[in-house]
Image (cartoon, rainbow, N blue to C red; front, side):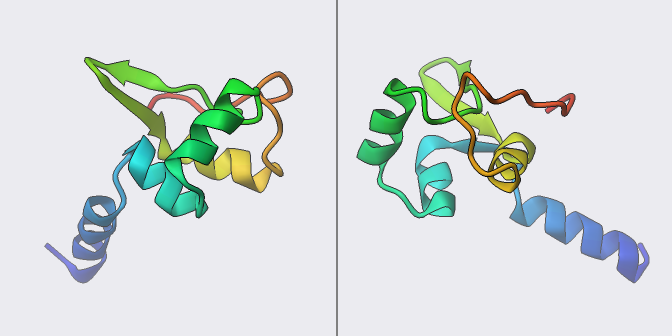
Length: 83
């Protein structure tokens, strides 16, 4: 493997494609209570994916949502695809 390929692999391992609520809250700098309060009020745009009992969110969608200024769920439309 060359250095560029190795770097890509290391980056991918360090940044998962899907985030749990706890990891998302750490990334956004908010508490879990704030997350669930804001979600219930419709202020969190990205939708969760449910795997069993675990709630996950797409990292790419979260990054795009923040870059767009954190619009409400009603205003948010993610144009990404895949995971």
